[in-house]
Length: 270
Image 1 (cartoon, rainbow, N blue to C red):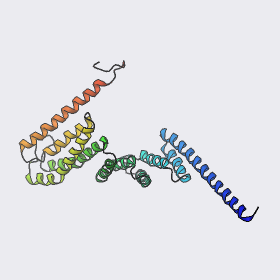
Image 2: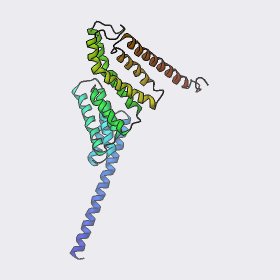
Image 3: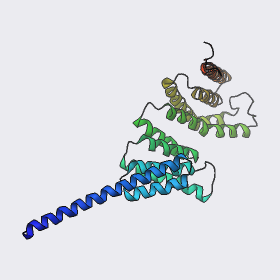
Image 4: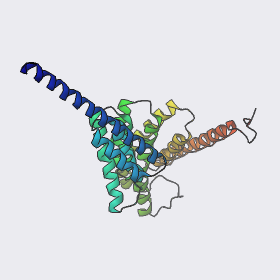
């Protein structure tokens, strides 16, 4: 056998060995993924994290393992708890979801997960930004539009309540805010947020006409806007609209309840 031919055979053999090794690594990675998924489904998230980390170490390009790893961190995060360990879980989830997006920039599930994490951390501006990014990819996500409405109300409610308290107005006192200067200042900051929230909720309701949670927040945002009006008449119009949304919410809930199967499996009203 001449030397050149022997060299070719050696290179080919090494290549086959390398491919076989890669195949073995991928099989091991898949096995670790399966173990991680089982742990995840059983709520054993710390164990799941270790299996997913091992799967990624064996196959760094394994996107499913990366997504599961990020979600396992997220499941361990407790909204409102400020311990270092809890904050580390949130940060680890953020980092892993961002890595998912590095590999797949249009992964809407990763975008929504980041948005939800920010929302749970009360980082409302960042949450709003990520929900909007997700809607650019999937403009038919009613829940994302709804959450933008929730964010709008969350941003505007406390400043209005503080303004009422500072003016000696109780929550149940009729509006609008009594002081024109305070009202104008709050209108400047709150009204654009309120109107953007209403627009988002309208889009949610266009996608689901029976979205009662979105209806409930339309009611709340009308009440936010009412206090910013210049006249009692304008205030009353907004409160009247808010009350109509309350009625519509209750009617929709009753309608949905009437469609629920009874104990005998028969839908009410049939």
